[in-house]
Length: 27
Image (tube, rainbow, N blue to C red; front, side, top):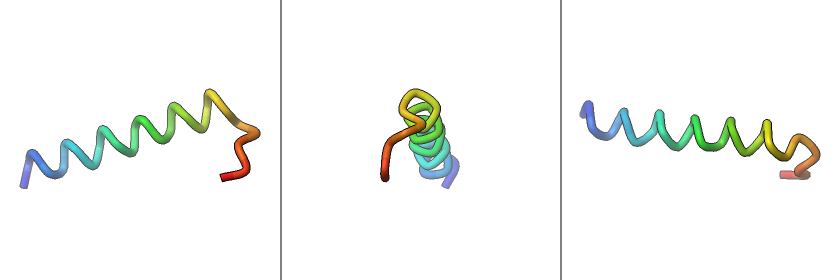
């Protein structure tokens, strides 16, 4: 459970960084 939660946290963090890096991304 902890491992799965960590993976979700990493994915959400990567998505947040992508949004900050590409704020004009239409996605």
